[in-house]
Image 1 (spheres, rainbow, N blue to C red):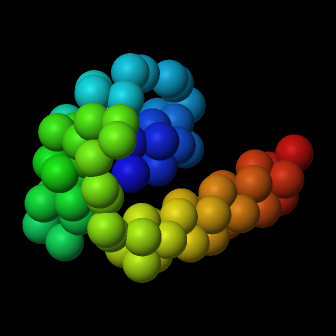
Image 2 (cartoon, one colour):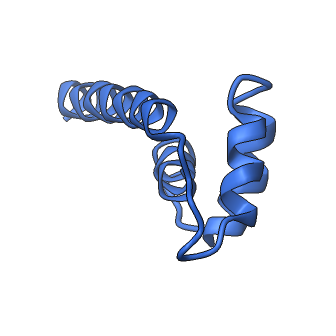
Length: 78
């Protein structure tokens, strides 16, 4: 979740921030649909269960699709 927030931030802003900074941004920018899961990810610790794989994969798919759209747009501009 936090890595996807970082990727989305980078795709939108062209810069890199910490996972925590990206999560704070993601809770605001990605909206109420993702905010609870981002908050859960922020509190997660190694060794604890994180039973949200379907939702994580959903955000991964969205991010992958967005990255492809950004790549296509940038190629078109070149």
